[in-house]
Amino acid sequence: PKQRPPTMGRLVFGLRSAFVVFVVLPLSWECWGAAAGAAASSFSVQEARPPNRQQPLISIALLLMVRDEEANLRANLHLWRPVMDFVVCGIDERTTDRSAEAMLTSELADVRKFVFYFRFSDFSQGRNVVLKEARRKFPEATHVLFADPDWVPESLVKAEVDLKHRSFAFVVYDRNGLTTRNVAWLAENVEGLFFKYRLHEVLVFPDVAGPTKILRGWRVAEREVPGRKTWHTDAHVVNDEKNERGHSQSYERYMKDLALLERDLEEFGPDDPHTLYYLGATHFAALEAMLGSIGEHNATQQTERHVSQGMHFLQRRADLLLSSSSSSLSRSSSSVDEQTR
Image 1: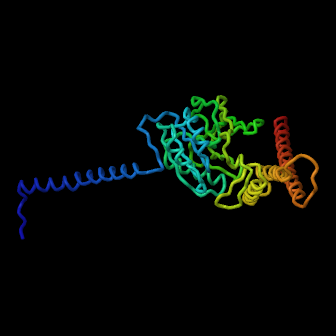
Image 2 (image 1 turned 180 degrees about the vertical axis):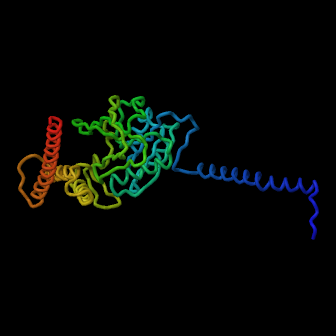
Image 3 (image 1 turned 30 degrees about the horizontal axis):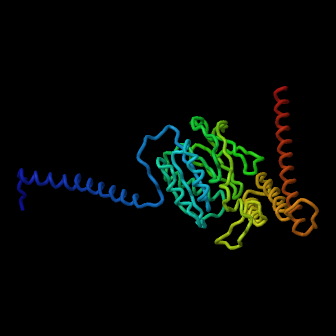
């Protein structure tokens, strides 16, 4: 049939319909989705979100990997406030205390927090999981700072962190009170950053990484909460996987460490100097833990194994270092000869 030209009433009705379909409904759906998202996040037990505040030029996410560290978290976490803007905590699923509660109910009301549980297999795997979650939750963080829950910051100067360097090293005083180490565990939050080695993990930077800056105003000390029973302090070991505990200088602990190091040797090759050193040192540490005291001891097959294996790995590492030094000297000498000619 012949169509009649639209009247003014039909035109108005058509425009109103189009407005409802293309403008009102999408806006309503977007508002409903935002409200639903807000409702979902409000019931999350994993994240604590403070009021919005302006993003600083340098923003640091503190990254923690913990197991049964409630006491240390309550004692130490707030001490990092001068330098951190976000905190991400991965909790080993074997944890039996209230570490998650300690994280979410801490005094840091103005710091955004994300807490989650994960299955631990080794130290680099655990730290890489925490790093991945930090990038997902807080991509706006310019830097990431890895720390242990028993680290007590004694001096922190956030103003020393800049955008010119890719990594920053600070001094950690060991719990024995005798030794220190420089740890470059503050880094620009860039793609390609990851931890290597299952034990005595090392933060590896991408090829585009710039120079490391030494943070001379930073001093951190390892310190346990007095009287707390942890694998650092409790010599008792329960050989049950679910409740497995020990202390860091027990023979059982060193045997587990050797198992991780041997897996690293298989993956990174027989000439990896990092793994060779820690294999040798750990064999002698296990021997010391097994004997328990200084003095004369009867040689056994077990003690002889630790001595021979410890010497083997340390000697191999020394040979590699000497070979590398000789090669460097040879190249330097050749370069001088070329310049002379």
